Image (cartoon, rainbow over all chains, first blue to last red):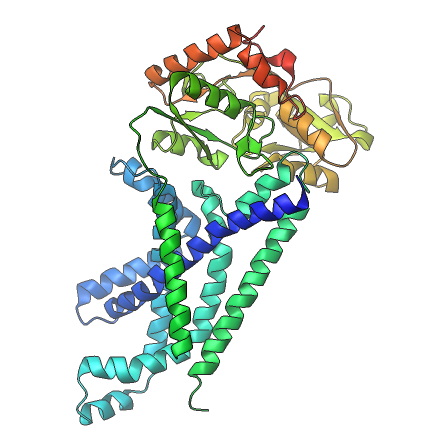
Length: 218
Length: 265
């Protein structure tokens, strides 16, 4: 196996890594906001349920959650699952896990806005939803960006956990290449590391750009 | 802001395309399907080929069986630790990957054995270890959830002399540890050991004494005799008409020993 074949194959694996990454963000960033609302709800049972959900998501390993989501429907409930369930289960597990973390980050952002702003909005005749959408949310987004960047970068590296349910992404592929006949061997793993690093470098750069753009008071 | 919207819509379009692609490929043709669970880091029985497909002696045979029966064939690279859960949940319907039958007789519904295997010990050539007795006080690596671990556990007198048995996810890691000296020996299936010795730099020797002898067979979910009978029937025919030997010859370079094909002899 030549160096070029190795790169091509790592690239294919990286496609899976990217799909997991983007689909997870697409699902968990908005879901996290919903979870925050639930967590801050005045309705105690909902608030309690969301607190419980967040504590489970943060308190158990993501690897275990992947296993439960993938095998659970069949082994616990006896349901038959579609043939592409492997990949879907990976996305579902990642989305519900990351939504819990994002929700807590958002909550920190929302609660850091002084009460005076709510009072001022009320005096000016803003409705509750107007206050949130026009005054609170834009400031919240600005404040939580550095923490969100942290999670997003962690997500890139967490994608490699899906090997446990048989989804072959870049790192699993790298390990397979490393033992294939005539392969470049262990060098493959370092090349995989370069893929991760370059991608995270781009992620950090994009996030920094967004931060700068939102920095409109300076 | 406009630029950002453009970027966002582009990203969104990309994601949608990817999810569309992911949703495809799940067409059901109504044909019987053989979904083989295997470990893609286990040459010569299952490994990654240069063109990005999965290859290996066992996969080639499974594909031939499907071709003869007009079945659909699918190979799934599973995490070897999860093989039982994969099988029980129906995500795969057989385990076919240098899968040792001895000691697991009552856990699966089995085909007839087709390869004679032994669990051997590989050490560094300059280690001075010549026999199993020399391993007293040494650290031995074996693949987690593998028959090599079972073989060591099954030989209690031998195990008692060892300092430690280190279980790792695959043999590539084992040979790296052997090279850097964090383990003193690797216990592996003979085909795997031969392949790894040839493909890893460094001077290794295989001990003459084996820990155990055993046989490979195809494992199906306990009670799934219907599928087993169909596959087993074809396997026997392939052994009788020489197809199995012909397939095997393609994998000699990858460490397969033709003399060990017990179904053909």
